[in-house]
Amino acid sequence: MRLIAIGGSAGSFHVVQHILRSLPSSYMCPILLCLHRPKDVRSGFKKALSIRATLPLVEPSDKDPIVPGHVYLAPSNYHLYVELGHRFALSTEDMVNHSRPSIDLLFCSVARVYRERAVGIILSGANRDGALGLLRLHRNGGYAIAQRPEDCAVSTMVEAAVEQGAVDATLSVDGIVEYIKSIA
Amino acid sequence: MEYDLGVSQVRRVLAALESRWPEGFDDCALMSFTHRVQRVMDYLGIRAAEQLEERILCAPESSYAELVSLLLPRTTELFRDPDFWKALRHEVLVPLRERGGDGLCVWVAGFDSGEELYSLCLLLASEGLLDGSSIVASHLVPHDWLREGLVLPSRRQKIDIANAESVLGESLRVKYCASADGECVLPGSLVSSVHFAKQSIRFVAWEDRLFHLVLCRNHLLYYGLSCSNANLELMASQLVAGGVLAVGIGEDLVNYQNGSKFTVLNERESLYRKLRL
Image 1: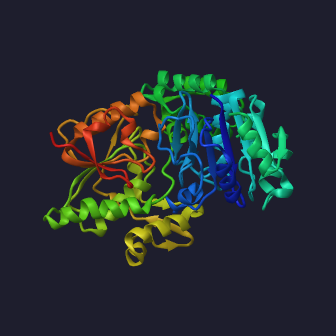
Image 2: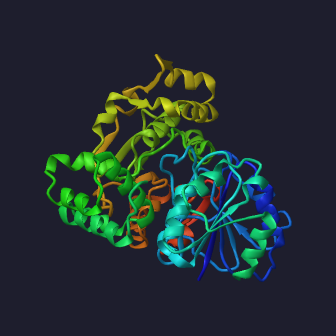
Image 3: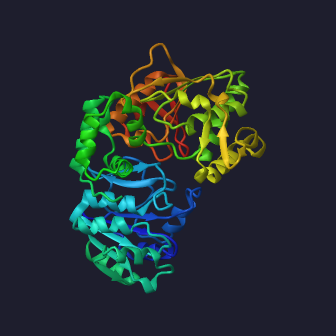
């Protein structure tokens, strides 16, 4: 089973909304979202993201299975990992890159577990979280995509990934949507 | 995050720990453990997992406490998830007080670095239930040092104080968690009656003890299904009928085979009640 992990921060919310609205309802590849989000907003964030999304959006609990045809959103104030055996794991440990959930931690676990079946996508954001994780994913045989820097509200996150040599392609938002559709 | 650790390397570190100190390290959640191993390697200046493995196997007994504190997860906020603590007050403590109860028997299970225990004691104190309560706090290494007080890290103070105010209100927060010289120290008197005890990763039954409340929040996260299922069964057996189990809001008992021993008391805040059979 292939798996897509998307990380983003400032300026990525509407991009993710656009992606989730553009996919067919029959889309089967699991998509994991790690978006920097306010710590104490537990349900409104997911609700807003779900508006007109074509696939079910879930905030997984620890040890929940990863099920095809679903989109998973890292819960507020937890790190999200994937474990061997296609299950999620959560963690409450210290912030990484001032973030919990951290994109680096998710991408590193996806890189270790899914290797060449992994796709990592980094979007607009104001810190470097995700750059190192995307590099790991890329080195483990996965495909690494960055949103085109000139299209980002804040390009720090994608530029950090590009600097690391982590990126196989930089794409527009529509280009990202078309790529995701192509690997169904 | 400099070292790229493979799954097999991390498994060998876990096996080394288990062989040196058989406490249940063999069923840890691998990915979060990998992150902590990387941090430990950074801290110790070690570049290869094999070196850490060797250090564990040759470690003197005296280094156990330090190694455990580095490798096990720490609690990262005071009153983490304020809505949980409010629900605990509303669903458990206030009804108890209204029935004339003056305290309860509580087990703080899991490897809390002090914040969870102090949060509980603060909440009980705010409801006038601390003096009448009997509390056991367990860890791989008993945390008696917490009797000296808990210093909240300055980098986190804003979050801790905001959480405490949300649960206790400002005046009680100031009473117990006042800052001085940039530091916030919770008084050791809050935990003076707590019994600090040793407990393995794979829990062992307390003899002759039943609890009204078990707090095991964000602990099952760090272990595999086998260990977590066994621990959940053990916690169920240590609760009185109708007793309450609190797990983390990211934990769902539906994922555990012994989850059926409980009914939901508050789904959003992951409060469960042991079924009366």
